[in-house]
Length: 259
Image (cartoon, rainbow, N blue to C red; front, top):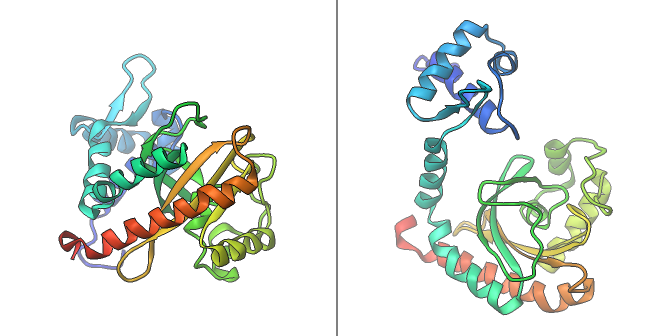
């Protein structure tokens, strides 16, 4: 922000767009103005511009704002430029077929994971996630798989001192409990979610790494706990998830288009 080329009006417009995109519901002019600490008149000017450009949509009856299709197009353009979706899709489908599980790929965005690809399986419960859905990192196996390289201090810096929000019956709510769980995941090479993000859901996830060894995503296989025991998830499904994560990591590392 100290750059001589920093454009404040552009930054304000993007802040407004981020505020609306990160909200779980549509927002009013008053709510947006309050969130970005601008007066209504100035905020309305930004909103009108973003709406005219297709980045926002306004409900004609409620006057509430939500992200437009152009925001989604930008997201997919970013993902496609990284090559993760194109490379991972066939492996995602193969894992789903072999494990008989719902599979997905997610990226970490701060304290949340964002689902970027899904392969659904018959009879497998879905917790309402879709491409673009966000869930917390601390209670999802995909989130934990993307945190396994963090030390204790880095984990606290990211998530805070706790207690962390409870999502499921077994949600871990303290840094010490979370780090101990991550330490086990690090040793195994995969993370387990067992009634943590939602009751009745078990999952196994493994990190996907780039050519530099950095974690860039995670692949997950999930099933209702009524269909699979914790032991079966670890003994049967998790090794398939780890193997698939390794295949995708290798493909990312050797794809010349990403060089």
